[in-house]
Image 1: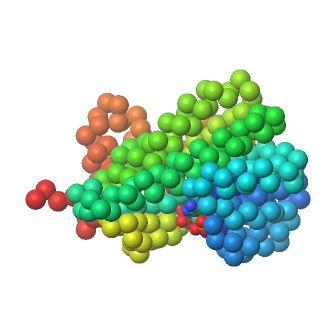
Image 2: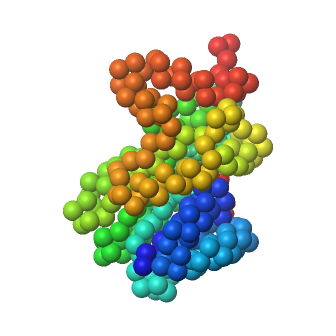
Length: 272
Ligand SMILES: NC(=O)c1ccc[n+]([C@@H]2O[C@H](COP(=O)([O-])OP(=O)(O)OC[C@H]3O[C@@H](n4cnc5c(N)ncnc54)[C@H](OP(=O)(O)O)[C@@H]3O)[C@@H](O)[C@H]2O)c1
């Protein structure tokens, strides 16, 4: 009977992970849904309950270490154990570095606090319990965490950092029977880029990426769960993503062109 924490469960990929896990496990699973927006969490919990799962709503801001500790400790106190931690909460951003005013550069740190530190805090708090259950850790990085994408210096930095953290951790916890699955989605059809940040650190309201070939949240969540269940090291999504990481070693210039092609014309860097 797995007890599963999902961060960023109030929307997008996290909410779909919750729905698919609810469908898969029904009453066998306890889904602990964490994010900041309590009413959105309630709506997702109602959908999961209708699919037969049991849920616990935990309003949490992952940038706050104490809140992450409280999330994990409350889960274990109420359910007795923790089997799976899915670090999914994340924020997007799109800006050319040269367009970011010096007095706004702090939002690079804010972004890192959600995408990297949120995962570090939750994972640190959960680790003793995951070791006890020989559990699973999932980290939702991004293809922008494998290949640097122009206009996404902050986002790519946070996702590369996340991938490095979890790759190192994987080797640390392997002998304790804990698996670490890092997921690298490409462009997925959610609202993340619309409420991501622009050069001034304000909500962008538009996406800077080409969205025409975006993956559905259903397919993305399906691939993440497939990798998690099989304790796969990585889930690299899209054929382009799978190829890009290998071409990068031999022909990095080609990968730079591919990364640039993912960005809408109006958001591409200008030569001046
Ligand atoms: N969509 C894509 O194309 C794509 C591609 C690659 C990787 N990813 C990654 O996939 C993950 C999910 O993205 P998504 O597309 O599903 O985005 P989304 O629809 O915008 O959902 C993001 C989730 O993160 C939560 N969140 C944001 N800041 C938080 C904070 N400080 N504390 C707790 N929760 C927070 C949001 O909930 P609240 O606002 O309620 O807190 C929401 O539930 C992210 O890590 C993202 O980087 C997405």
